[in-house]
Image (cartoon, rainbow, N blue to C red; front, side, top):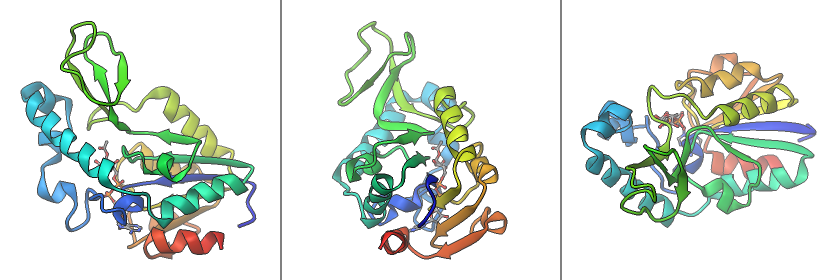
Length: 218
Ligand code: OAD
């Protein structure tokens, strides 16, 4: 790979080979659960304990998972390419655990919580309540919520200034994240199947990212 400036957008597919369920594949989370009953501010207002139970379970799944060869290849790319930004829709930390450093989490992190009263964020085990006494919610972006503005701006800039954008393991149906694909100069998709974005790609590589990415850097 000759590009000197590369941006990457990843989705749940990149963590599938680590055993973390995706959202829309056959055994995906949104096939088992209705998104609007779990991943919305209204759902949390209705039944915070249920929502926390669901996130606590997902935290356990992520904590028990290991980065796969796809995550490791992306970390290696970052070491070799002068300008490299990894933009992820994933709330897991497998990119970081694989060694990636410059990571933008568009949808937040499953290991953080945010106070509904003072907005303070914290990471790690969840206390009963915030120091200020406020109620805590998961530090992720839910349906109907805006992305963290600084992170979104940095992602747009990184894609605009890159020679190559790799779009990996995402169905490309959730906006604004999927809209980044339109901003890339040259865009290559890596996915197990064709997606909503495939038609607008300059090139598509079909297969598991844990196999294709290591081949790209070899
Ligand atoms: P999806 O579940 O919508 O899509 C997963 C994609 O990964 C599909 O296109 C699969 O074909 C592909 N895939 C599965 N296994 C793969 C593998 N081993 N290698 C390569 N590709 C593979 O997940 P996302 O696109 O990430 O948002 O979903 C986007 C957002 O929707 C998520 O961030 C989440 C969800 O609702 C929020 O929670 C805000």
